Length: 162
Image 1 (spheres, rainbow, N blue to C red):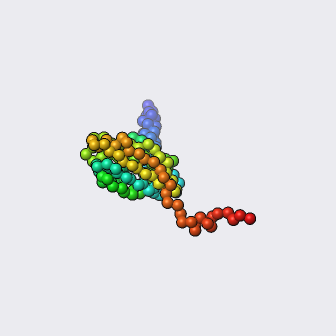
Image 2: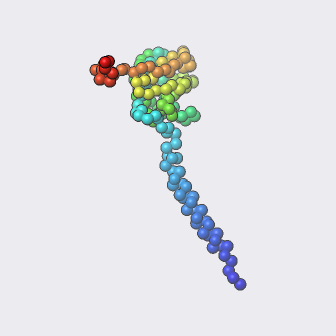
Image 3: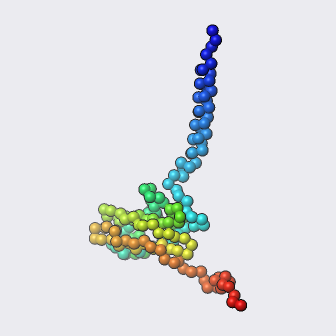
């Protein structure tokens, strides 16, 4: 009688599958660690956000890097005051888009802004309006041109008329 060859072949197949599974796991691990981070556009390191809180409630401001993902807290703006916050490029959604979530401290609900495009020379502005109960549905997020560079730097780039 001859010994069956099948068990030897199965062991080799199992080893091959284990090796392939480990290789696949090693390749997927670095991308799994970056889940929730979305790339900003090229060259955007940070964006200026000016927050004007026109209500009585203090509000927490969060950057939402992707729809359905919990935002990263940027800071708190006290009632009836303004603050300038710099948003990191890694907190932007793809395509250099900014989405914010704000929540009044002591309020029942929060407010999620629409997406706005930001980039070089463009700052974001958030006007927070809270009702007596802390609802923020009247708040607005929009963009404005940031401070232009000094005029002497622009003179060198203008074409000379002939």
